[in-house]
Image (cartoon, rainbow, N blue to C red):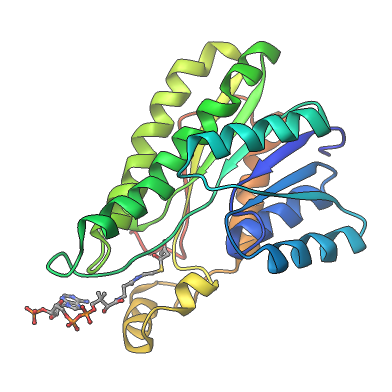
Length: 246
Ligand code: CAA
């Protein structure tokens, strides 16, 4: 389906990002998976997918650093010739109530989750405009809609992605480029499993489907948005949360 196409997936070797990398690669794309730290697990993820016949490469870079983003995009363009899809998935949590949250806790989360999407979009934009085509998917969160105790920084960053994506979609609508949001709920990843047990039990009670999501359940929506037939979808938000925001 995506043969000959090239995707960049930030945070693409762990959690939801790894599921996206796997699904796009199995659909025929070359996937350039970004990671910031943990070279060995990143390379292990890529090696596992390659052993399955997928075309995947991994690229170290911090999304909160614009020059790293530009370097990674240039590296991908040089090695693979094009970028069709950008999936801004990299994200972190530093959960603390506001009274305990430091300025650094605030800025670090905003810099990765929100500025990271800006940096990567900016780095790839001129290439996509020159080709007259491209797809951008930003991974937000149900927390961007609902807020959460202990997540003022994370909620603000994920809410910011809604406005950022819609502005991107508006500016690029006449240039063959779409930009959409996928907003997952609580998905079974290391990030969610790190939530204190009692707090997580309370969250699951509130999810109408009473379970965590599977990373592949998010990845399939990303894949759908990248398909050629999804060309009239832009500036949209797709939630994947077991009904949590109803
Ligand atoms: N509702 C209302 N108030 C709450 C609360 C809740 N659920 N949990 C804690 N509070 C209040 C407490 O009552 C307390 O208030 P007082 O000072 O007035 O008594 C205050 O918050 C601090 O409470 P604690 O000392 O117990 O809290 P803490 O500082 O040790 O930890 C916390 C608080 C950081 C929020 C911790 O409970 C926590 O980590 N919760 C989980 C947060 C969470 O759900 N994270 C999701 C991560 S996964 C993800 O983000 C992916 C995604 O996109 C969905």
